[in-house]
Image 1 (cartoon, rainbow, N blue to C red):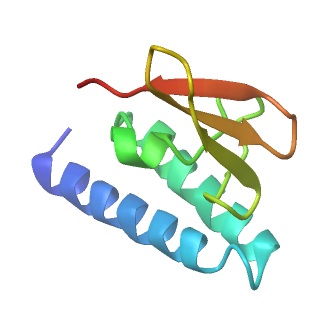
Image 2: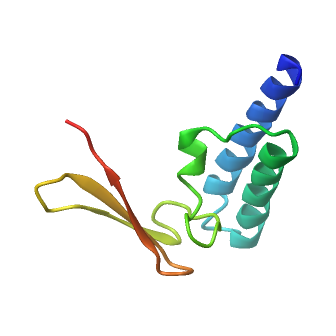
Image 3: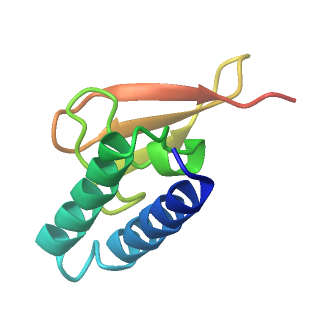
Length: 100
């Protein structure tokens, strides 16, 4: 793949996810569609989505979850410090471990 196409695709993915996060409260259908388009760009051009973009998708149902809007984010209270993210669509909870 040409580097120019890859660069344009990454820019568009960042732009679409940014717009989806900002539109999540006012227009949830539009934000879901924008996130779907970003995922579709990554699959069509065979580009792995960067971690900060992958984090806004549910690991189980693959739907777009905006932090605090349609997901619940909690800090773990155990000896292993972690962030627990719960999807409000499928109620799946997954953890991100915080390294010291």
